[in-house]
Each structure stands twice: as C-alpha cells, then as structure tokens.
Image 1 (cartoon, rainbow, N blue to C red):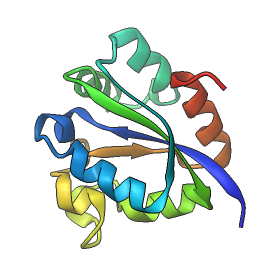
Image 2: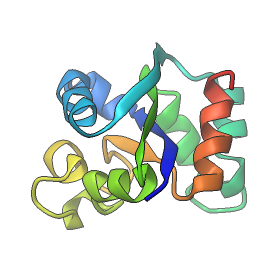
Image 3: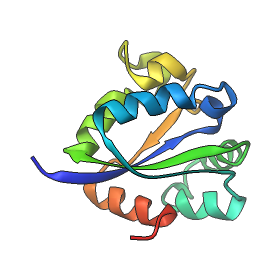
Length: 134
C-alpha cells in the first residue's frame, strides 16, 4: 500500500444542510486531515478547478452550483487514500450510491452529492495543490 494524498470538497449542498461536521467526523476516522479550510469559491476559481469539464454540457450548471455557497476543502492523507475515499464517497449519483456511503447518506442526486474526491494519484496532487501550498 502507498501513502497518498487526496482532495475532498464538502460541497455547498452539504454545507447548507449543516452536515459538514458529520462528514468530517467520518473522514477523520479513516484519514489524516493534513489541511482544511472553508471558503466560498469565486467563479474564476471554480472554472479553473473544473476546467477539465469545460466542454461538457453540465459545466455551466456545475460552476453555478459550486459557487452557490461555501465549501469545506480538505487534504486527506492515508494508505491508498484515493481508492478508500472513493469507496467511502459512493457512486456519483447519490440515488445509486451504496448504503452507508457519504453520498447516499447526505446527497440527493447526481450534482448535489455532498462531496468531491480526487479520482487518481495525479489528480490528488494537482487538486490539493490548487487549494493548499505544497
């Protein structure tokens, strides 16, 4: 197993529902939280962070959603953190996520799914550096 860093974003829907503390508790049980901050993404920040999706039809709605309220951004560290966090998050579509996952418990649909997580070691590094100095 490899020690990895992954980015977690507790999205505006979860912050608005006041469940970020409950999500954070789950994260702290399984990972070392090495950095954390709460912020309200600007359109420019959201557009830069999600630039990989710029040509996708859902991009404008994604930017609107991610700038609709505060988010909590965390850098998580642990053995096989990417895979383990993706399992803890559950399927992207909250309605299809397995019982006991963050998205099943706190999300409502494909977009309002409570959390974001890096999908690869490379993206974990890139995304973490987007919000936190190395």
